Image (cartoon, rainbow, N blue to C red; front, top):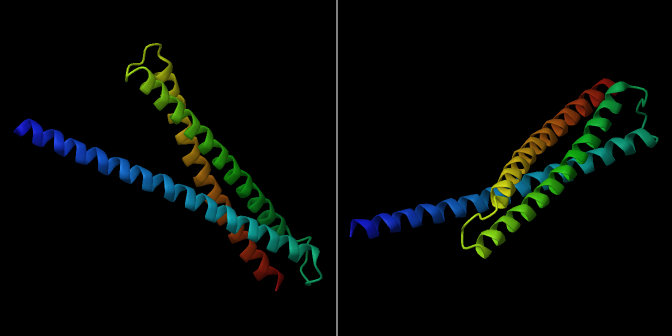
Length: 150
């Protein structure tokens, strides 16, 4: 009786973990896409101010700093998306191999793939943090440029 209850509790904890893992993956993607969208919009805004006849001083360095930070933020966002896709691909391959081998890692290939997916996951988080930081820096530079130029 206690054994069955313990197994049931373990199963419930595992299901909670899987559910929250799925939510975390989804939210990660939403944050990445949101910052990427804002960065593209901000880059377009700065570029239109610099190329249009708006009375802005394009020789002012803060404009170029914000332009560069938004561009690099976009690059990091795209790199993050590609890294996550590669991570998902490796995770699917790991799962498929375990299913084929009935949960046993016969050749050590699963351990190698798991190590790679761990590294890719850490890299994805690192890229997301830099993407957000660069976007924030670009926004700050843009505000300074707007204040300085007015």
